Amino acid sequence: MKLFWFETYKTFSRWRTYISFSVIALIIILTEVVMKLSASEIVYRMMRSFQKGFFITGNILNAWFVTAFIMNSLHIHIPFLITLVAGDIVSSEATSGTVRFLLIRPPSRSKIITAKYLTALFYTAGLVIFFALVCVSLGLPLFGSGDLIIHHYGKFDIVFIPESEIPLRIFLAFIGAIWSMTVVASIAFLFSTLAENSIGPIIGTMAVVVVFLVLGNLPLDFFRSLKPYLFTTYMNLWQQFLNIPIPWQEIVRSALILGLHNAGLFLISFFVYKRKDIKS
Amino acid sequence: MKKILLFLVLFLLSPQWIQAQEDVSLYLDSVEKKYAGLRDYTADVNVHFDIETFKAPDMQAKLYYKAPDKMKVESKRVFFFPREGGYFNPSLFKKEDFEIKFLERSNFDGRKAVKLKLTPKKVKRNIQDFVLTIDTDRHLIREMDVTQFDGRKIKAVIEYGKFDSFELPAHTQLKLDIPSFESEGVKEFDQLIQKPKRVTGTIEITYSNYKVNSGLSDEVFKGKESDK
Image 1: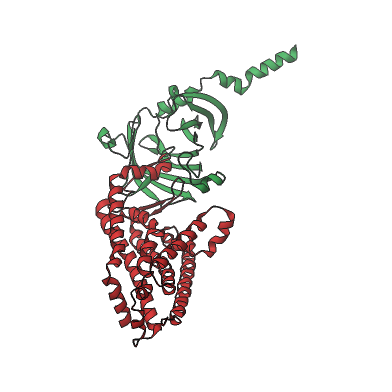
Image 2: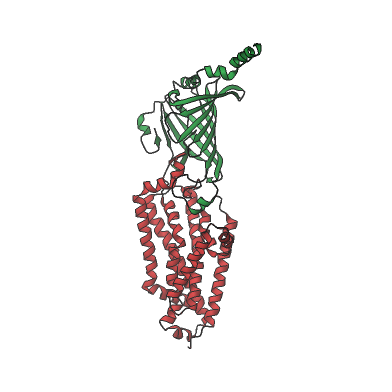
């Protein structure tokens, strides 16, 4: 536990760690201000297919909608920001030449790698929680509250979540988002144990995420058959909490698959680190 | 010669021939006249959706109507209210606005009825045509089939109740058959390669607490939720 706090202190002592938080704050503030300024255009584009058939009243563009809208960007920019720290957490010791000093001290390699992994997960959770807090705390005064309308652009497809259910669902959605993002952290962490510098793990992780996302979304039968084997398929776990009814079976399945990925990736990192040659 | 005369007599006495001579717009007139005294109404509406791709709980709102064509829905929450068939407007079908074609005589709920096809002379609200089933005994529109240019089809079945001496809708069932994708705008790749799908389902609207001819002012209809 002490090691974990040391690692956490080390991580949060670096200015690089705060790049991610600053970038997230900047993205959310910019997005929400622009959405506020172009509210009518957004509502028109969003509801165009429904406005032909329905009179629509009420506050559709509310804080919950904006939060869900921005959360959709989790796929790309949050993974990148996670890799900045998780991809650096082990390899930076090699880059800065501190790995030997670290490993000749009393704590075992197992404890050190576990502490580093837990720190990477802690950072990931912290980043997503920060994302949630900024989204909601800025969104509520700007857009107000209301029922949440989840709409698939261009399709006659809508999910309507009553306002009273939203806080719990959004909370669960963010828990799901944290769980999804831990897989990205685990991949970056594994690459970090394999590399001697930080650039490789960051680029490598992003390459994996982007390639898997692209393969999983190509609407061709061959790629559709690959989809169940790509972890990115299960990363939209959080979206399931904003569905009616909540598909608990699917959520549990996705969470288990992502959890197995985490366990597998950590175990590989663990053994790689245990056998790491620091003499040459 | 006798056969030809017999054929002519039968032909001239056939219902279609008789109907063609009739002024079919009288059926629309009779509906309009029946509601000539209806100046305005308010009602509470409950909308129930039974559409696979429209997952929403029942929604409630207050509906305001003022003759000839002002309407407004008011709700504290997000509310979706069907444009076609959602609210009752007796002035909607003015004979001068449509090409009217008689389709057939029929029965509706054991009463005499006629079916008319109305094609708007000026295209409004994307509507291609209406097919109305009018109860000729009670002068009520009981069914309305709406076909729109973008392929949407809506069928409304209306049940009436007596409110302050007017027969007004107590329940409307809307059957929807609409394209699942928008026909215009940029499409995603999977929308281009997939066969066009359609969404079907029903919307049930229940009306209650009617207040008729309460003297609604025009101010009520100012605001973005109103339709004129």
